[in-house]
Image (cartoon, rainbow over all chains, first blue to last red):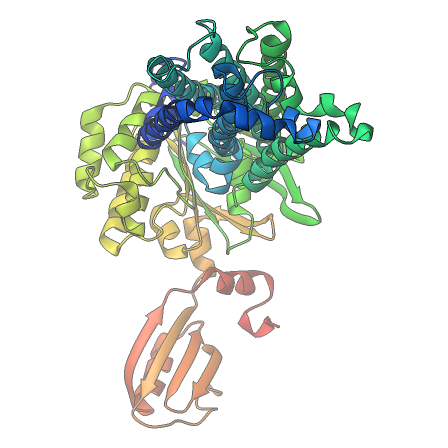
Amino acid sequence: MTTQTVAEPAVVDTPFGSIAWRMITDRRRSIMFWSLGVALLSLIMAAAYPSIRDTGDEFDAYIESLPEGLQETFGLTGASIGSPEGYLTSQLYSNMYPIVLLILGIGLAAWIVAGSESDGTLEMALANPVTRVRLAVERILGMWLVVAWVTVVSTLMLVAVSPVFGLDEGLPWWALWSAGLQSYLFALVISALSFAVGAVSGSRGLAIAVGAAVAVLGFLLQALSSVAEILESARWASPWYWLLRDNPVVTAPNAMNALLPLALALVFAAVGVAVFNRRDLRLG
Amino acid sequence: MDKAIEIRELHKHFGAVRAVDGVDLTVAGGEIYGLLGPNGAGKTTTIRVLLGYLNARAGSAQVLGGSARDPGIRRRIGYLPGDLRIDPRATVGGLLKWYARLRGGVDPDYVTRLCQRLELDTEREFRELSKGNRQKVGVVQAVMHRPDVLVLDEPTSGLDPLKQREVLQIVSGFRDSGAAVLFSSHLIFEVEEIADRVGILRSGRLVVEDTVAGLQELTNQQSMHIRFAADIAPDAFADLPAVTEAHVRGNTADLVIDADLPSVLRRLSDLGAVHLSSDPLVLDDIFYTVYDGGREAQP
């Protein structure tokens, strides 16, 4: 046989970040819809505040009639629902807003490895001179940037319209950014867990199921631990406990509510990437 | 490099299934190696271990002296998967530009010429394409960076005969310029057309490896389907030694002929044949010919 004579092509490394950017631009349409959706949610929540404020006493009386555990679960303790702090905590940051970010984050996380493995596109993605580690890391980065963008858009809208509806009264200037950041970090942890499950198992369904189960069961644990004493000692296992332990609207980010979830998310991501780098791919 | 692809005593099991069972295979630069086998023979698994999608249980599989997962080596490999899946929303042009960017050093004019040669519309979204056009995208992306090693899993699948020929010419061109080509297929005739050496996989084992000329000696048999003007006797070919297998149903017959074609044609004429078609033998026929002593040995 002859010896090959083709000259080796010059090695040209694609800049780091290209894959993350590609992931984002591939989703520009859905990101636009998500942005519009969360901006609208922020606007509606802010616009609804004056009517709650005006009937705050009646709401407070009703809330006081609820079991203490339920009040805690829905962020109804500490401040009147008629106040900006109480309204934002109970109606947005203790449930709806983190859930919206979770839906987005888990969906993207399950796609990074497991989703693209199931739909067969991973084989072609890795047919290029890109290591598995780089592919996964850049896609994680892309996911977190997308969730960050949606967080920023929704927070910006809230910051912009809250003075119009009196939702900024008595709140520090950083309140909405703090709550947004802590909700984002909360979504970061769960989405990293979903990614890790997908990267280890290759199953998109399992990745979504585990992420959703941790979020839902954690929410239930947080709710029931206030009612059932037997669960009280286990409430620390709920990610919601860590999100809501210090009211994110009035507590600035600190080591416990910011660095801990960040570290946890990085650990989940690292485990997922490490296993993905070594295992057989499920390519059908 | 004399051995651009080197697979040594490769084993890959999925549970109790031995998908690849001790395969040894080398492909040199300037050579097309046709890897033949029916579905499930282990062709795709062998390729996926070679390219690092799967881990070997034992043995080794190297490309250009190293692991295909090394980006420096990967850049010099062109790969077309057997089942091409790409983001369906992207346009063909967008996809090819993206792959060119990832691989580096791609000449856009060369990509344009390839697309024109295969009549590929780069403006359309991948999801709008027929299977054949999707396959063309796969072929273009596999060769666009002028790789030193081409690994093609069923590259002509879904293509019309004209484009099949075009693709085989492109692949031959790479061989002629010094590239090593591992070409997997279950179609003997296309492997015969371009391969220098052929390996046949069966149940994960490389059961025969030969030059195409050597393989052709094993494929003297022909398969024929004949229609007659009227019903013929079921044993109409029993006395012809050249007919190794005959299935007669009314006025049609399926024959496998080993040699002495003139005697068979005379008999067909005597019986009033009105239509005859001949197909290339499928791979199974060769397996049975070589390893089970002919088709009669089929269970």
